[in-house]
Amino acid sequence: MSLKIASAAVLSAALGLSAADFDASKLPPVSTKQGVTYEKDIKPLFERSCFKCHGPEKQKAKLRLDSLEATLKGGADGAGFEKGASAKSTFVASVARLMSEDENMPPEGKGQAFSKEEVGLLRAWIDQGTK
Image (cartoon, rainbow, N blue to C red; front, side, top):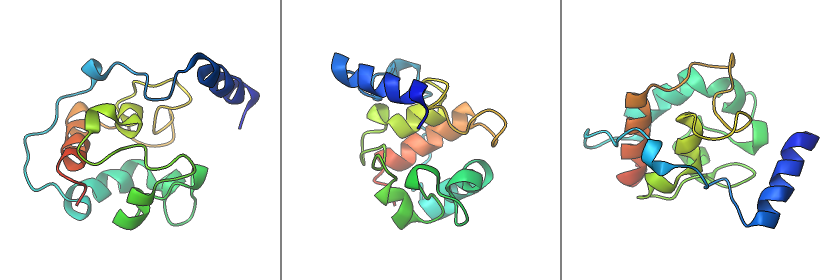
């Protein structure tokens, strides 16, 4: 962890802030698609944008996204989302690029960013129970 990130984490804790302090009103709307599943809808997005750093060969922050079980387990800081509560999700805020530069995923140049529609689909998956 860089000194910059560590200092920000210590300062945030001291001020009573958390990574969940983002403006949820800026999140793209939840997709209206029903029956969203990890295998059919979410895994292809993760494969395209996340596996380079969070797949079978590499797991930055101990986060692995190449299986439903691993995704639900989360990484060093947990899953980053709660079933049924996508608007509170730091994971969603991160791929929506609403977090700090260091927390937005994928990092610039490391994978294709999620479109607003894809963030909405991820939100629908979480809100529908992460099946």
